[in-house]
Image (cartoon, rainbow, N blue to C red; front, side, top):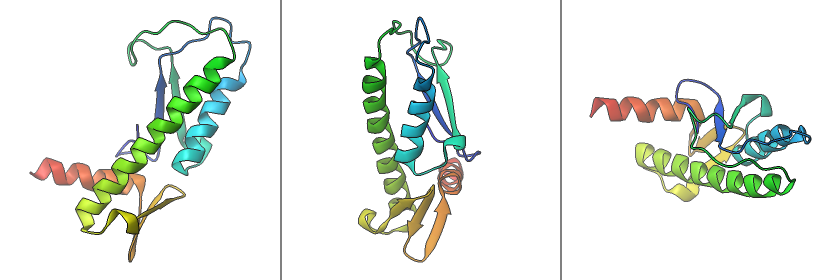
Length: 129
């Protein structure tokens, strides 16, 4: 999830590890999200296993969770990028294939916006309707 008010992406995962004997998991998932979204890892916030935010899921105690969650995260980031392109296309009346997403920026013909700027403009536009 990307926030309209901040330059941060939130990754919320239901999985919680019984024995966090693989402390690199958070780092790996943060790096995957950062790479897929084209933003710095320090702009990724990670919430894991908090059932007040995500649905309950059983624990995982094997390294396969990195593969399963990493692939799910890559797919979610791809969906976010598709939604960003669609929003920008609709707002600025340009074809989706002319929009590039690089370094946390939405690059349109003749104009660049950060993800946060686009999301704020989108939110403001929807609130005005």
